[in-house]
Length: 445
Image (tube, rainbow, N blue to C red; front, side, top):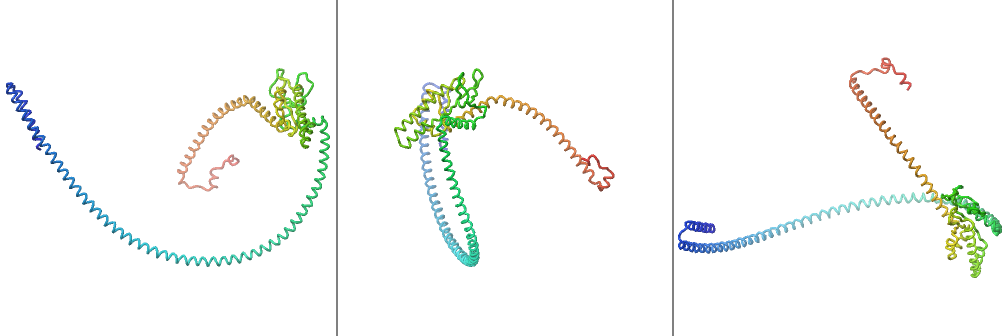
């Protein structure tokens, strides 16, 4: 309040100063008036500052006193709340102890009662089980005696039958062994005869050609290969077999893949004999002889049967046994020399079968590519007809919906007629047939 009064006095002095300046007195009087007003202003300002400082000091003291009082009150209330809580906790602890003791006594009593009840029941169950087990043991003992007697009788019968059958089977097997020994002797004679036959060069060639023919028949059809074909133009030496490839020469003749069978058994047998006798020098000489024979046969095939573009630029030399093929592959660098110098590929029975299967898959792929355009045309025709079929289905759908709507209307009308005739008394079948004769056409249908 004092601050506002001082401010009002200061504002009044300013207004008086402005009023005096507006009246325009003399210069000296004006200076004195300004000086007096300035002195008054300074005095008022000092008083105003002093009063503001004293007011702030008294406000701080009052605030400190109030805060101290509040802190003391808060401390007292906290202590009182702590004492109250401690008292409540002690009371709750006493109640919890009493409740725990009561609950423990109750549980102890109940557990004792349950234990006694369980003991009685367990005794009863044990007695019942003992009785039932005794009865079961007696019954099982009786049944086991019966089963033992039955098993003994059956075992005796079965043992006698099995021993009889076993002796009979042993006799039959001995007889089969005697027959097998006779067959083995016959087979040994046949092997000797076969070895004697294979010493002939022509017979060995027929053996290789027969095995090659069997492999070709297993994979290809008759029109996919041909036997004894002269593959060179103007030549007179027919190759054992030639496969017809899909390509054509300029004259329209098929493109041939020559396959010739060779069986140098003499050199191979000498090599095997030297290896069995552990004759290193003999085995090396026989191996070189076999390698030279293979080179000679490859050169002969290349000169007699390969003539591009009527044939492929390579031919296949077929070795009819896997052992001979493996021995030739063991010769270092022989396979590469045959392919590089003579354009000859070696093949055993398994390798040739894999080659023929690969060629057959290639033939099937080419046939599928040729027929793909026909397949697309058929699919286009099917697509056109399917569009027409969709239009027909749409028409059938619309007509079916019309029929269903008509049937629904007829059903609704029949319900209306039924409701209208609900109160009319129905006649018997005889009276109805007399008044409304049945339709003969409907009966016949």
